[in-house]
Picture 1 (cartoon, rainbow, N blue to C red):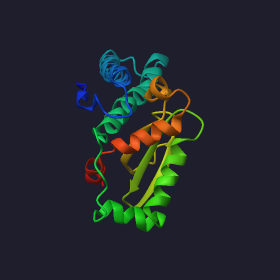
Picture 2: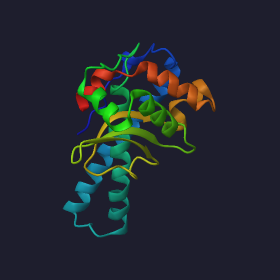
Picture 3: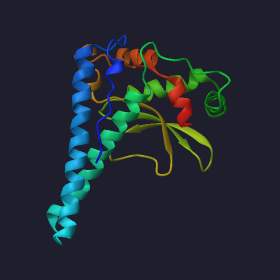
Picture 4: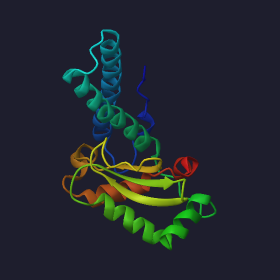
Length: 191
């Protein structure tokens, strides 16, 4: 059974009202609850031999949405910290960003531009261990568009619930606040 993680240590983070964060934490907890409910329901359907039914198929499809909603929020909140932590320019991740984007500024411009695209979803800095390359990727929904076999390093939530209360339609301002709260030590440890 999955247990919701406590991210209350983020309360008081500059650029994020406590009301916005508490609402966001509640939304995340709903994903945890629904992941558990779906896992239980699917197990019961297997035991009662209801696999192959339309109900089973729909629950199976929904599981990816709820699970990824849970996990992406955990990654997002975990890569944030009050005051942020700067990226160590001697770290392997920094060197990788430079190697793949030419310089840090190019990477940051690309990440922010990806996050500012119209639509709802996620922006993720992914690492592909097979070719040892990093990518900034737009994920439209929790369960669509992920790069198979790649590891998420930095996760930015760009669904409206992540910023509308504090920023209205000014997503770029939200992204700037997010950048000031990134915990690069956590991100680098994922690399």
